[in-house]
Image (cartoon, rainbow, N blue to C red):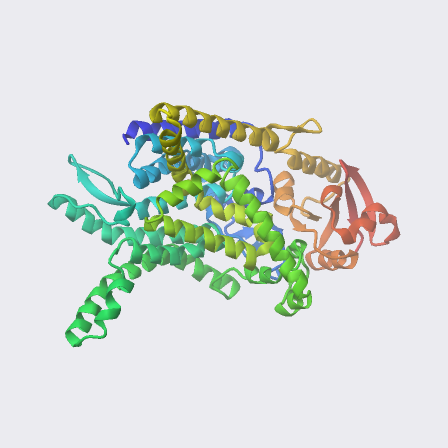
Length: 576
């Protein structure tokens, strides 16, 4: 495809992102609030610290707290980059890297499609599916991990699918143009062969580097390191270890020597890939070791033992152990995973497949079933699905799976048009359709349905009004009104508030905040005492069950006094 088509897709992607962003005056929800607040801390020179606690999993000692003890930092780095480059500590500056990154996803998706099919029409259709991204559209324009994870995933598949070669004196991506090629590099003139040899050196490193960026974006991004290793062995080296070396080891020593000479290039490629990964992740491992005493963030391991989602906010977190998890009973453990299975399958259909695209994706994958890149993509999805269903079922079904699959979405968009083309070819054989005309009609219909689905999602989640306010910014507006009550009552600016969304409240008020713990009134008092909290905000829409009586009848407790109420949220003074 020519650069003009890629540029057109990028401009369309940027235009749609800008249109959605125009209705998002705030990050919108806690994940995006967290990364924006982290970016603000970095851009304002306060370093890797947080003036809030959104969970207690790492047994925090107080405020300010070391940042990223659970989530990974790259999204906040991007937000900080936007603010540093523009010189403005503002929301519009923080989101600029995300808007620009989202504009790159459609042309990258088209490039993946062209690498798989060598058809310009299918590549353009893939790019348009990425422009109108359905359920992902509201989230690609805010400070969340969706955009960088999808961008790095697209680049990963592009590196897996291509080689560099010289065409008419210009460097271009050389692609495996048939499933039977299994990713083998094309042959050509001497210059092409030289560039291909360079790509054999660079591409494994790039795959490891991208795996590192994905891990720095999300904790489950570590899954992409073994995927990079598999790509290096089975795609960049079509004559695999399994197919050639076993027989050699049964022969005399010369053949054993020859076998080792075949193994050596694989080992070298794996080392290059590992070096690319460590270039990104090693500094972060060192930081964590110095800060927390462990190379990985300490909060994530306790999430393994959740028996209900609200335990993510358990206090003290030491109660989350394998023993407590096992005591919940085999029925509960299996029940959580069956529930997560259903939720994640529903997300696969509704979000990844956009309902009507899923059959086309499956047909496209079947048509490319001999292509090792397709097997790698299916394996990546399978690993993600298993981890988010069996290992982290509660977090996975409540959004983790949706986030993780963003890295695979460009590949699904890339293969869906091939499924449509095969379906039309079947119609031409069986029904006498005119293939070219039918493709034009069905492709236009596919794009039309995708545009409609995207519009409905954006209208419902971003533009739609709730109580006369934009749905997207409703929580921020409510927090601002609650803060006005505290100001009028003379609350000190450094007084700590206990609230459902601590980073969101901090952004709305500048006030330090900590999370409402999963527990009863006594748990709240223990948290308030340890972290010197002065106020408790209970929101009716997100009220922990054990605090229902405190919300309804606060006068029953001498330790609390009702200060005010706004939009179903009650502010209680904690009387130490």
